[in-house]
Image (cartoon, rainbow, N blue to C red; front, side):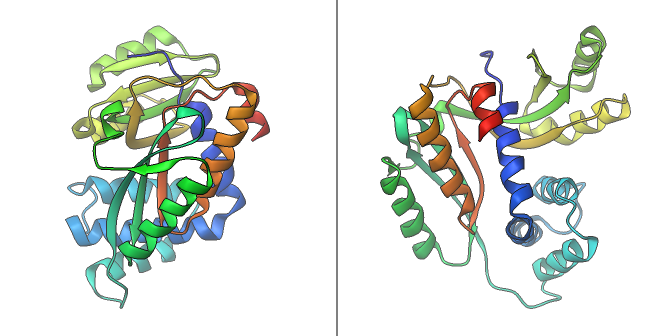
Length: 247
């Protein structure tokens, strides 16, 4: 696949999450509730729940918060009905975005997401207008440090991943969604420390942006991610290391 690094974008997202931890916990709670209602309480057979619990651990979400969200999902505790939604749209500079959301009011959320796109100089698109530019993959980030690339490549092939890309500060390992849990366990069992792991949308190709366009896109991205119902945002733009460090 193309040699575009997704690690810079993930670092920006993590920095934003660290700055707004209370909002992050609320979003993760929604994803936990939704995952349990769809697939039950066993993370070994419910990949969405497994990923949501991983997010909770990475965000240092208190165990009691996780347990409370799971009980809301099973109905042991009262809670609102939640629905998972996927929005596709175009942002500044000819960029394309996929937005994953969990909401208790699809009409309100759709109107608010549409407003964010239009205010940012973009527009919401119909289903399929953007998603064809992406593919769903599992992504794992392994920071380079003094890591032996040959050893990692051998492990990647052994645990069932499909691709490895080397960048200046990290390796990115990709797999099919169905292999996500097995690849994650395999990498960790071999002693590789994962800086990030997620099941999401990977752009087939990326848009190169100048400095002004980059600033506009990053501001637009931040506004989207601040929305209380938005879980994750994926874009097809290239972020330079300098831009990611100043974001």
